Length: 223
Image 1 (cartoon, rainbow, N blue to C red):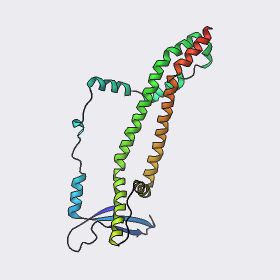
Image 2: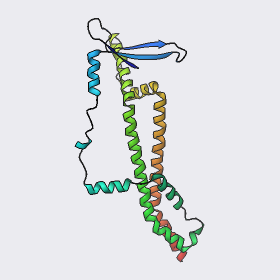
Image 3: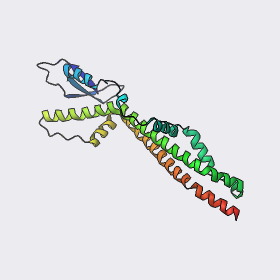
Image 4: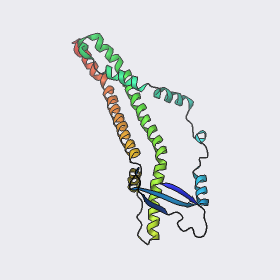
């Protein structure tokens, strides 16, 4: 979709109305291109409206510096290294009947449980951060999809036809139609990240009860 700037004034009857045309070319045969015609002064006002006025992060409430330092320590983790370490330590192995090996596993269980939970928190935060970044990137595609739907409704009203109320499902459907590659990539990546978060949450639960199981092993060896 292209935003077309045209001078305002008498005779400019197609202001704000989407224009669709078929482009028959060797490169993209049968492509439908949607153009939104906008009067010049409206376009300039729109540009001024969307222009960022600068970050306001400095105006946000802050937490206690001590709490902030704890937060940084909890989330300061090498996620790949932590995952490999947890996977390797989950099994006691063939030495499960040796007192020293099992006793060491008991000692490590609590620290590993804390590490597993930190890993879960870190990856969950990564998902939230990625999702917000994608929302920023996809905002323009969402705006385009919404604009196309609104223009179609305006055209119907001008033609004395009933217009349809735009729903969230309509917007997502139009986004998928206009930007299929981006929409599919986002959906698949999000599904994988959500699956990983769920997997690590389950791992954290396993490590939570790990101390009990290895303690039971140690009791069996003593007997």
